[in-house]
Image (cartoon, rainbow, N blue to C red; front, side):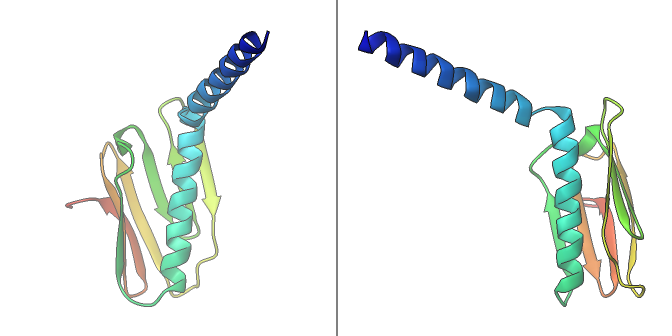
Length: 121
């Protein structure tokens, strides 16, 4: 009886972890988290003095289109998904950049300019 219960618990736990793993690797979650990461990085750049560069190597980004404009970041995925995240940017900052079909992307802050571009470009 005890062995059967332990096997059942093990099976249920395995199923839960499998479902959670599949969900976390879904296109919708990846697009959402990528937009969140870029938003967090832009907010950090604005709040911290000096020039900085952050590269996003954790994923092959060639499947995604990323647009950085004055007050928002737009991330488009393969399956037609689009996520827009807004942030507050002081009027003296300039945010620009676009990434499409680029594997590695970076955000670079130089003075009051924050630019999204491919790594190595």
